[in-house]
Image 1 (cartoon, one colour):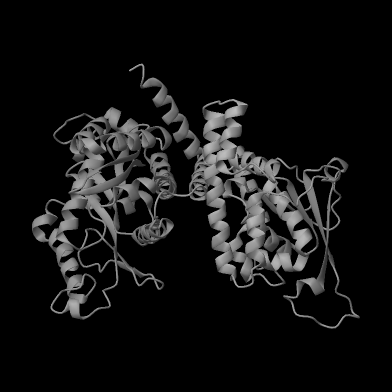
Image 2 (tube, one colour):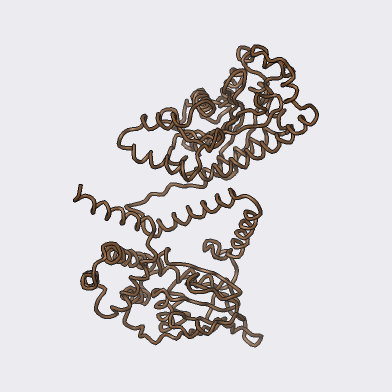
Length: 588
């Protein structure tokens, strides 16, 4: 990530100062022709320049303006360096940045984070941007203000900056000091980057992890503060001594400015902060990646983004809760994550044992009639239950079958020791000895696949991928409706699966196109039936226009209604806003 993290301090004698800074140096470009005669940012000369800048900042002329509280590392200290073996990125930490341009940027961010008012920053930020971006920036600030808890007091996070000097995420906090004015000193941790959108999108992540670092510093300093107050209570000493504004800093044993190392009594404080800041830069850089989207994002993409946002909000709520309830919720979350380990499809290929590789492979193992029956139940939104002793095989079947549905329609419990109701999951894996409730086995909205092992000591060894020789599959359902007419999506899919000239990848792209086609039909039907509130006759005309009538009409309509539940909240909200705006426009 092209960013920089710095620890800043408000000195009572010299004002805002930068104490510690960590930056990332990317490896040089592999093309030597374009770098002839050019100085690389990570070469030895650059390192000497960086050391020279730090030496210059700590030179004799500047030493007079620096006290113990303004200094972290001595001028002779080489700093800290960590190297990421995967990317070759080096993380350098010293009191000041290596480059003069970054020095001034960090200096300005330090001053603003420790001395600017929140409201005036917001006002100047709005005035500094163009009018065409005004609405977007205000919405982002409102998001930060109400969702991310911007500056509940003098302590807390804040965002400011501009295109010229970069954008800054800053978190101010206090450290207890028995010799300081008000018994506390003011610090801040700032992250400076030129990418405003990236920094705002990383707000919950940065806030969560910076809080851990800040709480560690505060708790360590609080112990030192309590010990010092126990030996010599400063409040009573100050109340009994004569007050003079001119000599007030020298009335505290001549130690008005104490270093952070002295306040925390942490012998390896700066090395620990280097590790924390380096990890933060690496994790924040790998957390979000840029992807080229051709056209508008699909419904599956929107749903995945919404789910990720909800998970981050839940984590923030758990960490922000107090008392034993927070620990219980966090424990339950970890238990559920461990229980749902197999739900990560990306790790499925690494697990041993036979697995279904594609829809065509599943159709070949089950047979065409059983496959159509199973796929029909999946597309209609019925609960699909697989019961067997091999959780990897069951999860591979779910991975293949889930490709038939939009992401928003998938609710999966990979493997459980008890039955889960249909409203919780439409894909359910069960242990072989789990009984199915009577109301479920007699329901036409459920299909059960029993997987029994065919392997015995009398059968010679067979290949692991020969699933039909290892297992027997029994499909049962109380459904009495004919499944040979529709839906039309399933009919077209079976034609593609039967065509051996089409590879598995081509069939996957064919299925993707079919899903997008039917999701567009779902959006039109949702607009007419749910948003506009059209009558039955108008809805029937729309269905005819969409090609959902004729043979298999009942299945087509049922599929469309079920897939409506998979629409993203973003799309529904956008549609409702557009409709309300259209209703207000005539009156205006």
